[in-house]
Image: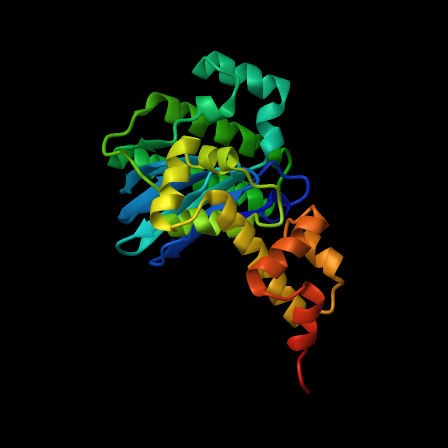
Length: 280
């Protein structure tokens, strides 16, 4: 599962950035290092955020907090705008005070509804307002950043006035491939059953049972095997030292890494590399 960092999406000096898009291709599950609002002008399908799935229709707006898995599953062409927002924006004292005043909480994750729906008239106003924000972003006239900030706060007000509990939202159990994508994308980091369960709003016991039933192995064993498979590939295809490869694959205990590698593949890492050395 990909994770996009805000520095790849938002220009230096800007708190937010708009992207107008049209596509008929679904997006894979991924996480972000920033906040995002997705405003849909036309199209159909569904938008999954965490363990919830919402219908996509004209005038839909979806909010995604940092590190929350999400994806868009389309049944046709969709026209929409992504608004990416730096996490620091919601940490400013005056913005936190504003959130508290409007939403009753200063935490953006709790304040901004995950999904909201506007009627046709409001959806047109939404598109027009975002168009004005895009012009400010492009031409960058005097006070453009403050104007974009005001437009964003106006949009958040509109979200507060709309349905905070959208009809049609259903609890969505993430398919095992999505969970495995998340694990593989974070395989070099420390991964615990509780951590991954929290990412999908599961209990640790439920996720443990899911792995036992679906993968015929434990969560811990699955993660370990993925680390070892990655290590085997790097031993074969790269010239990095074995110790570095172990670290890159999330194996912090080198002694256990050597032991588990030999148990799984029947040879030591050095022997495996020698046996699989490319022949030119």
